Image (cartoon, rainbow over all chains, first blue to last red; front, side):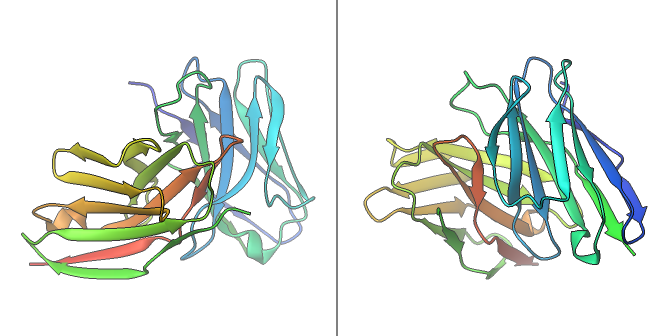
Length: 114
Length: 110
């Protein structure tokens, strides 16, 4: 079965650079969520999109932006990277009408800022 | 905001049962989930429970929910070394996002 695809799997950037993370949800899933998991931390919700519109916003820095495209894939853009942005970034997708399932998470993008 | 708490660490011997506990504060929770995360890996959904249920069993996993006390537990029967991982409970809030607990590191020794 198709899963949530994230790319790249690993990314190394220098401070003040820009990074773009991509997420391809499970086909027919209409909602995408982004989470950030710092070392030894629990995943923290950043932002979500439903039908290409932002549906909820969490602790996402102003330096970050995201969008969902017409094919439902989503991109998280991170600018002016800081050392503290080093983390595992997860994307998850779900279908709004399926109320009894957990979200399917991608394998994550490990971002290292040096 | 919502808060989900877990004990940080649990150590058991292979073959024993493991019980991982979770407390949450959100009164409007609809579903509660358990995820497993192995080192450097993604989040694997183990099981979930609807908030109007008090128990759910799925093979070696048993979830108990005490909605009055806002307490959730995950029991793993016949724990194996391959069960060693971090276990997160997560609360589905009104806006559909998941709020994760702090994670419990389960160590299973032979």
